[in-house]
Every structure is written in structure tokens, then in C-alpha cells.
Image 1 (spheres, rainbow, N blue to C red):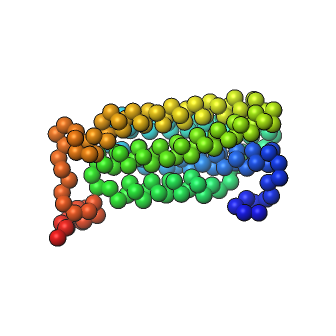
Image 2 (cartoon, rainbow, N blue to C red):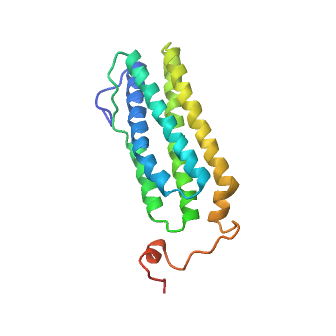
Image 3 (tube, rainbow, N blue to C red):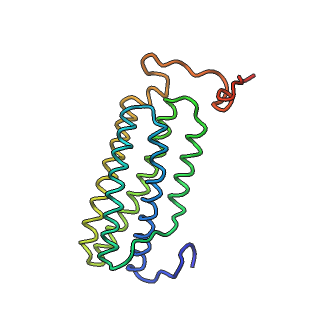
Length: 191
């Protein structure tokens, strides 16, 4: 039986599980985005994350529309994949004390999540089309299109300024003090 709560025997079963998986994932992302928005220091990055939060809310609504079309109550199923990506992002960004490096890490973490979502939406679209449910596929295509656009926007932000600032090539950027981020936060220097 593996990770699933019941045996999956048909493509319909697999689609139903995938729909619950991405519904859970989108809701977890909605919970995680405010922390990323607050932590981001680059104005373009902050705006992009705020915009994507609104898109994610719309994506959840579209998924709820599919549940309704299936005559089901919207329900998620715990998704270890998204939990892992969000947890990894939290761990990484929590260990960074330099704001420009933090912005670069936020982008990388957000893009890992975007790629997970793109993979899930791609599979769901293919399964929906195979089942003859182009109505589902068309709705899911909207979500996929937004995820791809968000990923591209994050790449542009990273490549236009954030990565250069993190690498010390930005105008007027001061070098961080010696020692690890935790040592600097605690007022200690490396020996």
C-alpha cells in the first residue's frame, strides 16, 4: 500500500490522489509565503512573492472548482514532498544572516517549490486528458501557466541583481563580518 491511504488501482484513483496532494501542497504554500515575504529584503522579490500569494489563492479556488465538478468536498492528503521542500527552505533561510544571501536562498527555495508544483500539475493535466476530462485539464493548465511564470520571474530577479549582490558584486555592498551567521547574530567572532 505504500504512502497512500488506500490502494490505487486506476488512473482515476491516481488522479484523485494527485488532486488531493496538490490541494494540500497549495494550502501549505499559502501558510509558508508570509514568512518568505517578511524575510525578503529585495523589493522586486518581495513584490513577486506577494503577487504569487494572490495567484496561489486563485489556484486553490480552481482546485476547489474541480472537486466541486467531481461532486467531492475539497480535501487534501498529506504530502511529504511539499513538507520536505518547505522545511528545507525554512532550515536554509534560518541559517543565513546576510540579507543579500538570504534573498538568493529565498529564491532558490521558492523555485524548488515551483518545480514541484509544475511536475504535479503536468501529471494531473496528462491524466485528466487521458480520462477524457479536458474540462479538468483546462483548469489545471491555468495553474501550471502561473507556476511557470512565477518560476521565470524568480529567475529574472535572481539573475538581474540578487545573485550579484549575494556574490559581493553589487554596488556599495559591504562584506559580512567574519564568523558564521549564528556567531555574528550572537556577537561572537570566529577564532
